[in-house]
Length: 363
Ligand code: ADP
Image (tube, rainbow, N blue to C red; front, side, top):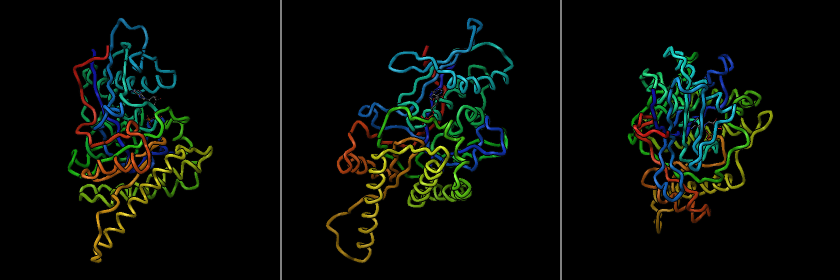
């Protein structure tokens, strides 16, 4: 009864922030539908950031208690009580379904910074639900896996799938799950991450969710996010990069406005985050200006600026969304015009799959 799985994190285009008040909070049901892209890194040799989690779980009568470890720098570090509670929540639900009482050992490795706003909780719990289902011989389909991954972390519901993903908020454990909008590369978009800080954030998202409802802006954000989820889904299906970029950027600002005006206030950005945000906007404005002039027949020496948009999850690190053909130009811009070091830049493409069983075990 041992199995391993890998999973990729995702970047939210319509964010999950705050749990639905009319649902039990342990279900992690969001206030609105959300949308994401499951992501994979291209240049991990340079950045050392490989956007993937690998998890192994075993159930055995030899174990006298449930244990969980995060493999960090080749060492096994036991999960602390809060982290272990989240792991047990997912495993226990599946263990009950399998009708067994055997204890488990679990080891997981994030090949990228944990708790830094790059969505380790999403890939972590997607990988956990997937390997647990296999080890217990439940062999759940992706819809079911999405529901159980959600119990560990809401955004993990989306990391079960590759490509673009829509999470229906639903109104119960059974109706709140993610589905794929389209397969990898059916919509042309890529991203470049400016890694501003690899360290752990001061407030985990799990704790931050609880304060969302204290912001005056939250109700507006919920209404807007619900409408825009439907709109962005259509734009993805229509390969409309500009609409997807504009909606994503605005939705990120709505979420951070709620965070900053919550009680207590939450500031995930730092000065370099704002520096990159402003540079992305200027660069894009330049692109549109050039575009307008060319349309008016004014001759340009060369194409200036790039059409790119930013989005920031709960952390200081920024995803610059761009067309795939512009990914090197965006990297060049972030490195040479904004001054972010090459090792802190991660080029990202859409991941073909979200979670999947692998043969290789971590213990
Ligand atoms: P992030 O932006 O990286 O998702 P969060 O604060 O939302 O940051 O989540 C980090 C938390 O997610 C960790 O403290 C831990 O509880 C959980 N987590 C991260 N990676 C794993 C993993 N591989 N397996 C199980 N839980 C994990």
